[in-house]
Image (cartoon, rainbow, N blue to C red; front, top):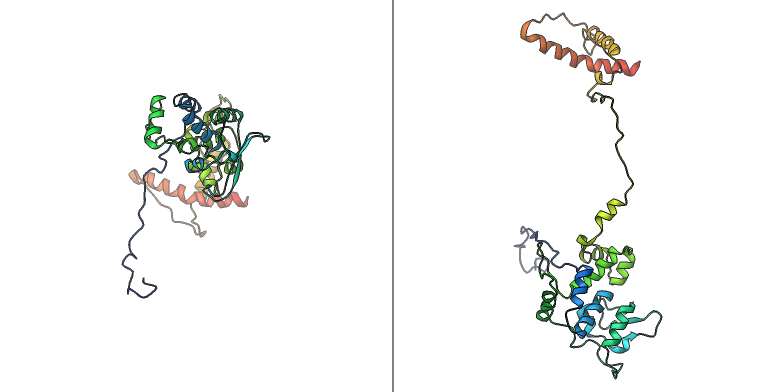
Length: 284
């Protein structure tokens, strides 16, 4: 409106952007043992839907649009083709099928099914129906971090299983059909399932050697770099001779200090002589 001269000034010009500090990770992946328990609870048609998403990463909307002609069980390897008309990124893709999934799909498919018939239309459960299955499988709906389990968690479980099995990031992106690696790494990989301890165990063994000798004096100046007490004594004598001259080379008047000013004078002489000694050591 300001650019089209409908208003004189933008009233929102000084309004700052809202920072949403709430955790964006509200969905968690299932462990393999939890996924197996989930598959053993529901009837055959829902268990086949869950297994298909776990092994292909298809979305619920894509599952509802598949026909039986999209599955090719005779190919080598067997595969399913996702048409561009139902794909979220509007690109057709082909997904390989594991033998376990092929056996489940053949058991689930009707014997007299036509190629143009929907494969999963009406079989993908709604939210209330899905929530009953994890509860029956003794899988908590929400964990201690507030992350929940829904049907899209099966797609996240697929991406997490790929990462845990050692699949490269580029391969995982292709299988998940992601255009950005950030989605594959951050959103669809549950970091709590990664084998972090096993990765640490694979590191080379390093150790600090045992040494009974006293530790070296900490490096704190020129005097700490001296190699022996004899050298340190000679250098201290040299400092007392050099300290009578300032940095400009002029001879300083003798200063007599007694009592409580003696420590201050010694500290001042040591501070003035350190820089002089450093220059002397660098030139010699």
